[in-house]
Length: 435
Image 1: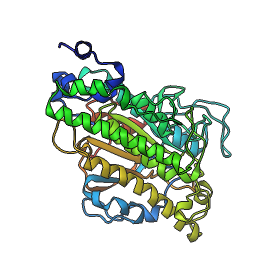
Image 2: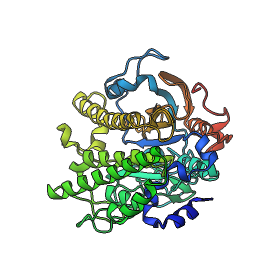
Image 3: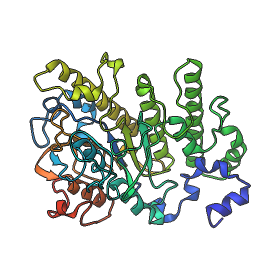
């Protein structure tokens, strides 16, 4: 059995079983088996933060989490809070547009006809985003190549395609639409759900294949097969329960109709799929975009009927509005905490430790604060040990370009680029103080 294709042909295994067996040691090269699986997740939430409820007062290893970051207290030793990292990119577009389009690209927007705020209109970003740059680097080597170079998850991202709704780019003028329908993401990962109304079991068509495979692989691989099968069964049950209870279910089409009150459920489903994609080694790079720049969710599950973006425009003196904004941003931190906990509780397949030991999550935003539309002091938080940064610290930088952070992410994967995005903002090199 010289390779996977020969192995599958020898056993008479169909292609439908591939999603379940791609991470089994029987199919891994020796280089892949001996190399560590490093992963990156970039999570986005919009409209800036509430500075006085976000930034720790202290700098260094001893710091107190403010209200917004309190949900992450169990992981304080595995997180870095970074103050003073700024989006210096200027040019066409308003700050919401530049904040979103330049967040991961670090480069100017093209001139265009999308009008925002009182600034000049703009188009798409004029360069690749760092998630795609790192994904391409990993895909270029056999030992780090995965089924998908990257996965783009979304939650309630509008159907419209514009600079406010896209943060990932495969290249200049080439944005990537996130998949914000968990049923579509499920189909992308497993490729077997043809009719959500019937929800016929994915496993029915591959059960015999999986049984034959389990007879010839190791005990550890058999256990992994069982875990994959259990996860798919639970997802199907969850989707069926959603239908049975009359909950609004997104259509199986590009984009998803906004169903505001389903945001918590969809977020959890997408995060569960993200964790499972890492277990299966479907990809090692992912983005997770909750709504969009200028996002307008009404978080009624928090007792808030106001739109997020409209609240973010209120002056600092409106303490009632900013109390609501703190609750909203705390909820986003709770979603991050859920993802972090799932990763921490999930063993690393074929190795010691957990997925969190090999994953770095970067939580970012297009603005520092909504009412000023500032691109300074973007609320960047990193959690996890995937890139071997020195975690458990509150860092305060002297207004540094966020391009240097993007370069540091690449370096963490062994991709030693000298600059990323606009090279003017990389003259001082990779962001120091992370290792």
